[in-house]
Amino acid sequence: MNKTLCLAIAALLGLAGCSSERVSHFPSYKLKVVQGNELDARAVVSLQPGMSREQVQLLLGTPLLRDPFHADRWDYTFNIARNGVISDQRTLTLYFNNDQLVRAEGNAIEHAVQQLRAEQAAAPRPVQQPQQPRQPQPAFQPDPQ
Image 1: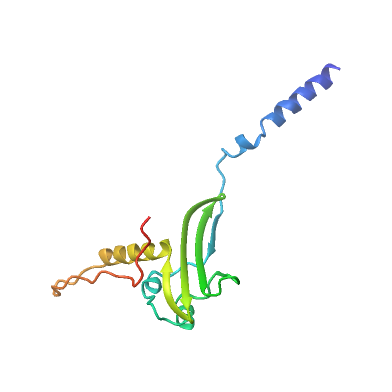
Image 2: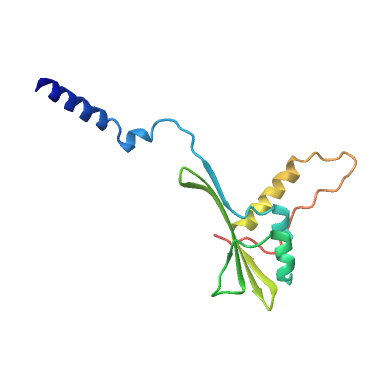
C-alpha cells in the first residue's frame, strides 16, 4: 500500500510539472512563417493610374486574392509570423475600372517609400555631383491613419 501511494504521488507531481504554461517558458526554436506576396518596393512605387491589369500583374505578380464578388479589386497581402504572433503585416489593394488601375491603398505603399528612402540614405554619394538625390514619390499617396 505504501509503495502504491508513493508511486501515485510521484506520478501526480510529475504530471503537474508538465503544464502547457510551464512548457512554453522553455527556450525552443520558433519557426518563422512568411505568407503572401512580398512586394518589391520599386515596383509598388512604380504603380501609375491608367496601367492595365496585365502591366500591374507583370510588375507585382499574381495577386493573392481575387474576389469573385468584386472583380475590379485585387488584394496583395504579406505576413510574417513567429509562434503564431504576426510581427509584420502589409497590404496593398488595387482598384480597377474598365481594366485600368484607378486607385491603390494599403500600408505597403508607405512601407515601400520608407524602404527606398532608407536605401538612398545608405547609398554612398558621389563627391562630384552637387545635385540632391530625388526622393521617391509614389503616384498613390499612403492612407492617413
